[in-house]
Length: 547
Image (cartoon, rainbow, N blue to C red):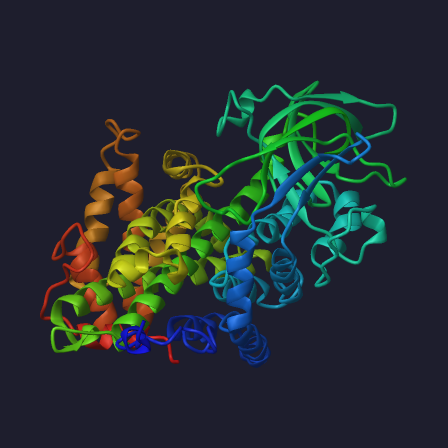
């Protein structure tokens, strides 16, 4: 066959060999906004190193291999002894090691730590999202463990370490450790109070044995797990080490790995506890209150992960359309495609801007700012609901920009699409988030006051935003059937919050387009329905990854 029939033309170059951080204008501007000057230079230097690694062909290949060769469960060794181990491709460990060394579990004890970690999360997650699950849980375990100071003193230095150690051995012999969690059970799901796992106290103070079945246990090869179980006074939080201090394996029977839609590089398991040794975290009967700090932190990571998927999807779409020609010109110059790309870019920028604002609130709350703490109580579940809901249709539209090429596994777009729904499900699905917002509105007036103060900073800057805030207040004044209206209400809260941030911080063309389409009703249900009179070319150019 003649080689001339295989001449490749009109195909974009791979989006590789670039700096993921430097190519993201929105992220760079957010760092300048939220970090003090004395830490900004160091953060930029760290993120430049990470951004170049994330954009490298090598890291992209790690991400491909970690998903092409998903984890494998080994319940027994060749002699019949129970081992309950999960084997991963070496690329998984390379990704995880890079994430740990980049400080993705080390936010709690450094200035601007949450903003810096959020930025690193947004960058590194674009390589491969599955391995961010154990990094997220390790980071989020810290506030829960602080309910038991002696446990926090023992474990926090390990969890915030920048050294990754994959070996299963006693945690006190390791330079760093990872955490997982096991809360849900098959009969309860998100209703964790319906759990039936039992905790029996031992003679040693704070020690128990656990008996029960957990329907979802994330990252079962972690060094420790936060678990909910029923003790004498009710649902209680426990720390379950994978390996006991004497080197023996804690009873931790992995029954099977879940065959998931996406997130395939990450192992999610069903596990059995049968005489499993555990230490109590917090008071008996206050398990939900103890673990809520972990849940709040992982919910923010759901927002970050969704924003990261959006950013990578729009980067791929704009990159493809910049080089691909059709119907006599570049796709990016075609008015209708430009409308689609601009709409995708708006969604991505709004998600990133909101995620960074939440991370900044975490830093300020850690420093004792109670208003920021109250703001997080409402803003985190609202953002988690809306940003994760928007992720899947947004990524699907970006995939379509690549045409048939986007539907092919080699493009990487199908992996992004499969990954998108997990953030909406993890740490409570949409209804759970909406009901949590209602609880905050009904029980914690300081949370709503903090929200109003935040959006009020943009008052008078855009009439469509002002009208949306007024309409939101009117809706909140009518409590009839409010539970059935919760999704609609939370959507409006999130959109108003995003609009207020973009009006204050984004270029005028971005803020104008967002307020027109998302708040002013001048946009359709599908992406690519922005008013044609907007500055769409400037919006697309802002989203283009420099390559």
